[in-house]
Length: 232
Length: 108
Image 1 (spheres, each protein chain N blue to C red):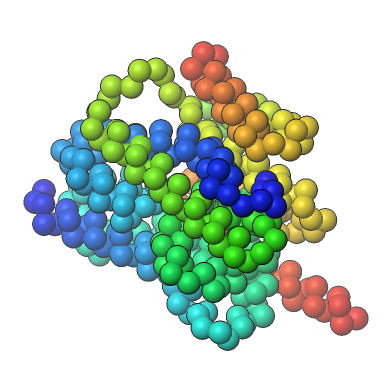
Image 2: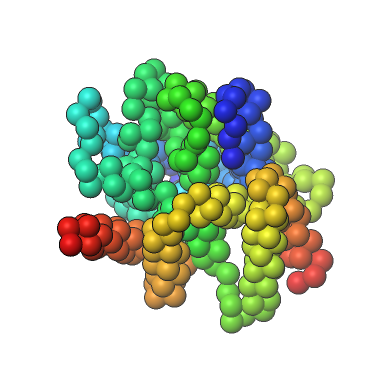
């Protein structure tokens, strides 16, 4: 996924799949937001300071439905709780990042996480520089997309239906890369199995929280079992 | 809907999101080594999370209703095949996405 040489160009190329997905999804967001009467300034502020794709789409519902602030807070908590996972797994990786760290933490979206979580640059300094650049590029794509959508409305020159599959494909290739990088597939299998079961039980709209809890429980059990095996 | 309430909703959503992103870093900050269990999670979570995110993207695909998740299945299979063959992220993503767009726009 990443070569030994760290450069701006390399970070740019790594984010091109995200560019495709973010510009299109961002445009969709901007268009939708403007049809509800919230102009470019709203799109800019939301993509600048919330910077969370699915949550921003949901925020449009919160805005138009006149949700209470408590409802807004709880919805965000449930939808974005998965970011806790990204933080936990990057605590070590982002250690000692210095002045760039607050922004890198703020900008740790699903897609950014997928690009930085197993970065193979040899030195910590290079990994930090790469992570920061990837974070900036990705938010640039997201903000550009939402501004284009907000300003140009529904004038899109060709049919882009389905282009958001780029993000699915991105996660899938990272998943495959990770699968090939190790002989220990327990965690990957736990992640997929728990998520699929939770979608079947709780439905697509409500599966994330139960999936995250069951993944945590399964990984905890796995650790205990393996510790016991090691002691025997 | 008045603008002040809207602005407050945006602020609340932003603050909760930012809070969630910073919380793990705030708890395990400083020079102290992270607790072994958190270090363990940091190591194994990426595998589980990526699996979860793939499912997350496909969560609203219906197998019972037409087209029975076929565009997604075919495109994911193509991404997997391309990736196992070339090990080139861009080729896999461009190929899979083009295939998906053609399928949902023309075939299904």
